[in-house]
Length: 240
Image 1: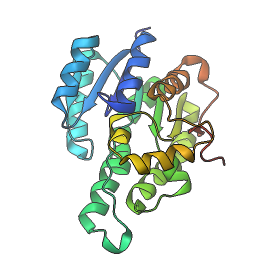
Image 2: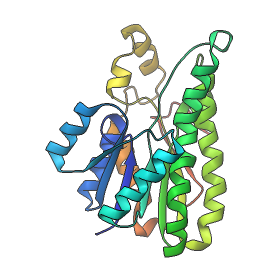
Image 3: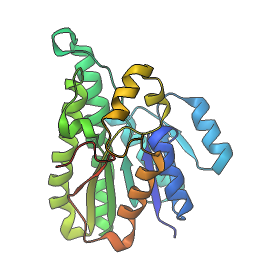
Image 4: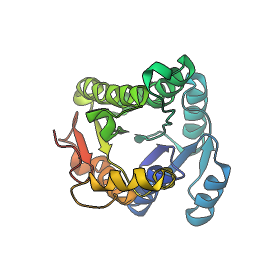
C-alpha cells in the first residue's frame, strides 16, 4: 500500500492494537512511545514495526520526531493520536500539576502532532488523521475532570480541523472508546471493574482490536467522504 502511518502511544493497549491493525492492512507503521521500552522492544520483535521515543506533550520534541521520521521513511500520510495519560482526583483535591499534565499529554499532544504534519498533508492534498478520545470525554466521569476535559476537547479540535482540511482531501475523525481489555483497565480494583462491566449493555469489555479495526476503516482511501465524525466504540455504554 505504501502509505506511512504514525501511531502515538502505539506500543501497548489500544495503541498496539491500532499499530497491528494498520500493519496487517499493509501500511508502513511507525509507533511512538514515551517511556515503556519493554513494550516497544516486544512490538519490534513481533512485527518489525519501528518505534521512536519522545514526549508527545513537548511541541519541539514532536517537531524533531516528525522530521526524523520523514527523513528516514518519507512523508506522513496517516496520523493516529492515541497517546494519553490519566491522573485521577476529585477536583477539590486535584493539583495544578495533575490538571496540566493530563491536558498537555492528552489534548496538547494532539495539537503538537497535527501541527507538524498538517502542512505536508495540505501540500500533498492527502491526509488521514484519527484522534482517540474516550467515552468519558462524552459523558464525564467522577474523579476525571482533567481527563474528561482533555478528551472532550479532542472532539471539538477534530471537528474544527476537519473543516480546515476538507478541501485538501484531509479527513479528521475521532473515536471514543469505552472500557477495553487492556493492562490499564486490568489494574482497576476487581469490585470497580465489576461495576464497570455491569454498566456496559453488551456485558463485557471491548477488545482493543475493535478500535484498531475502526481506525483501519477510517484511514482507508475509500473513507474519504467521512470527516469531522466521532465514532463510539463502547458496547452501548453511552449513546449520543
